[in-house]
Image (cartoon, rainbow, N blue to C red):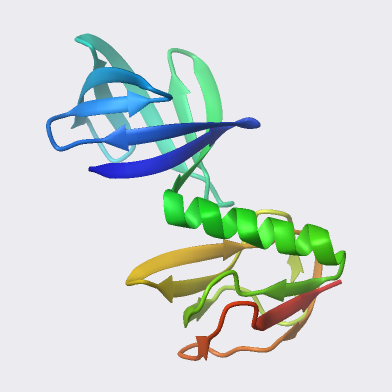
Length: 166
């Protein structure tokens, strides 16, 4: 069983996928089948009704879907990633500073930005491995990176200052 939080616009939907092809979305159970047509097109059957979906991973890490003429952008996170994002956002709101702290202990696998780079809200900054899962830490604010206090391969504790954004 896999559990995700899917965000569309400002609404979050809990999604549970089990091995038998049953999906629970916001408490509603649906039988689902997915077949890949090509690199970005899929045939999705929900309760025996077929849908053709075109899916692209966007530059900001979100996914763009085209379904029956409607385009929408989603964020798909595991429950752990969603909790980490919420903790990170709360820490930034509380401090009103441009200090970006680690939301959890882990190992810095990749630094995606450099000192002096401009960042927008939601842009990927760091890949942090925690509990054998890779977590993409995203920018909670817009600005310019003024310092990076970690290196790839470094272990960090919760609340360790990773970088500053002004």
